[in-house]
Image 1 (tube, rainbow, N blue to C red):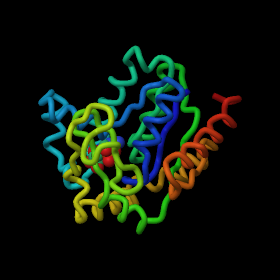
Image 2: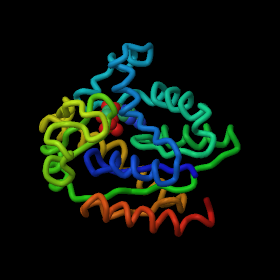
Image 3: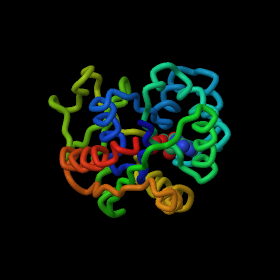
Image 4: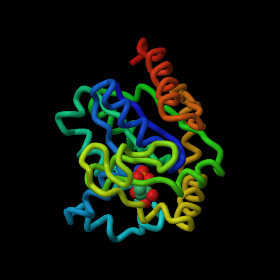
Length: 220
Ligand code: AMP
């Protein structure tokens, strides 16, 4: 199964990606997490990424992102399938994904579009916390960690992502509307899109996801 998770920043894609990944035992490939990890580890990709203002919500150029995804999905664990969280984010990236998959005689099975009103997304950002060690995400009200301020999995103190700052969030939503929102129509036209109401609690949203994916099994 090869899936794309689409939706504005802060809508809950990361949380759903982790759940889908566990449920179907397929890797979740998050370009944002890959970039943050590469910067933290100071790899060659990390040094390239540092030339762009990802901490200010600006996109990394398509060629850089596509090369990183190409390398990642060629790895052994992606042979069974994978889901993409945060990629593609532009029409050229979507076209590059089609090319990468057809080179491997594979194809995209479906796109889940997570939708929520902008004001709700802005409000969610203010409570979002992440684990700098394993990337798991929490929300101080909607999805609090078991122990306040600590990651459930590794007990690392949680942080606010620098790009969750209110001004940067505004910019990220603008960039999304301009560059990524057109992908909704792109994938709808391709007959691959299903929209999920992401305003509900994570458990309820996951219920919708499973219902859609089970309904899709025949063409996966
Ligand atoms: P995310 O964790 O998905 O919100 O990604 C964090 C940041 O990484 C984004 O705001 C972008 O600056 C950059 N980024 C992640 N994925 C992409 C992509 N597919 N295309 C361009 N930039 C990206």
